[in-house]
Amino acid sequence: MARSGVCSRRRAEEYIRQKRVTVNGEVVDSPAFNVEGTEKILFDGEKLLLCVYFPFGEAAADNGTYSYEYLSPLPVSEWMGRTLTLSAEFPAGFEDAVTQTDELPVSSEVHPAVHFTANAGWINDPNGLVYDNGTYHLYYQHNPFGVNWNNMSWGHATSTDLLHWTRLPVAMLPDEEGTIFSGCGLTNEHRDEIQAAADSNLYRSLPKDALLFFYTAAGGSHDSACSEGKDYTQHTAYSTDHGLTLQKLPGAVVPFLKTDNRDPKVYWHEKSKAFIMSLYLKGTEYAILRSTDMLHWEITQQLTFETANECPDLRPISAPDGTEKWIFYTASSEYFIGDFDGFRFTNYSAGKRASYTEIAYAGQTYNNAPDRIVLIQWLRTQNPERLYTGMLTLPRELELIKQDGEWILAQHPVHEWFDAKKAANTLFHAADTTSCQAELTSPAAVGIDVSLGSTGKVSFSILGNVCAYDATTGIFTCADKATQLPAGLTELHLIADRGILELSAKQDTVIAYWELPDDRPCGTITVNADTPICAEAWTVR
Image (cartoon, rainbow, N blue to C red; front, side):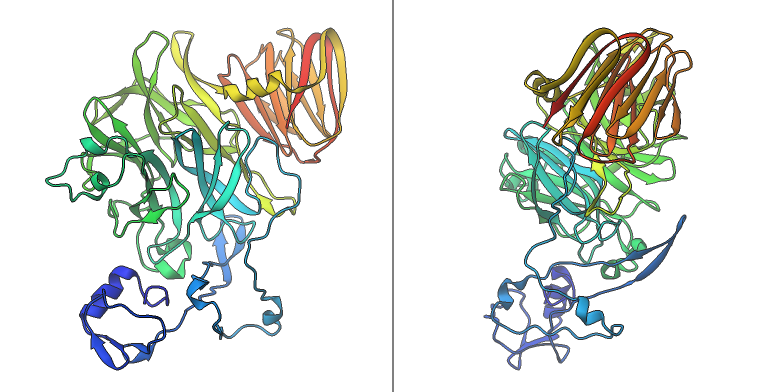
């Protein structure tokens, strides 16, 4: 009944017990009644059909309108060898555009070397970041059927070095509860500490090497016909095959709280022996929830950060003096440093921006990453008629650094980037020069390091894109867009990777990203300065 599109499995059980279902003319009242698939099954006297819904249309947006379509693959295995007929009222000629395929489209285009992209389709927020048994799992907001935001699902990829990724099948698709929005992943290593009156708690029954996931079911506010009229709620899923397949659990673990409540991030708090969930509510409002059994969650604090928005990530971080601090990281790259006692977060000062540009958004840190905190963000890039839209930042390791008496968050490229640099192809390496040039003959990510004077000027031409930094004013210009950075930066570290430019400076406490309008994979790279500089460039493939 659920596969026919009539209802959810949970609702089907209710209908069966209400004696609304017949099999070969006989009423059945047990959901456990076994059928072979050849029986005549009626629900309220009507034959079950495999239902396919195609809502096409336009929805209003701030910048005009956008088209939408919500699609889900059919469970076709039980239909092999049988005839499937689709009937609908479509515009003339529409049927000519309908095709049958066993695979999603695969892009033959050159993708960035170290910035993750989908093979095809749209991506946005990273989700479910969890390290397990030597593998970094990356789930992400994904529309596998188009290059625009739509049909939100969880894509999936894995990596052992955070630079090179293996793309895997879509992990979760929309269902009767709604489209699949942001969430998190964690291991079940604290299974034995989960409180329960008996071992009937599902999480206690799962093995310790299981992976647990929290996510938002978006409800009907985003044009999903399957969830029309439903609110945002928080749900769970699990995996017992090291993240390859995810099994959704029925029902909401956190019911509707407020307006847009979404983006759950769950972290185990060792000192108070509880799971802590940070959750976005609406506008600039957030909530902290606590649970000892993962089934019942209590709000322990509501917070408002005037300039922050969405995707909270509350977790501990060690300071250089050995003390433990906590960071509250938000989608807008604004973060707060403070203390957390298992119930309430107390920040020391006003929030700080981790990025000087707004293209990076919706960051999330890995749970369970060994001996480091790794952050990945979504890069809100446009689509110049490619089969994919959007990419993710190079993963960065977070560290607290004290500058001018304040704790500042530094974001270093993961050490694997520097490991790759050691074996990379050097494009140029020069000291006391005013000009360097090299040719990139095959697609690769390019690292560029420049040392200059505190009042110097340096310009870059990167595969047809012109950028420049004036140390006197602090203005960095890229693609005719001027960004105010701190003045007097003497060490610039750039990473260019088809369509994106990352910059870090001042011990990686100054971070900025720009989209490069010319995303050609090969071409000339030059560095020019008005005074002698040291410059180095290399490639990572």
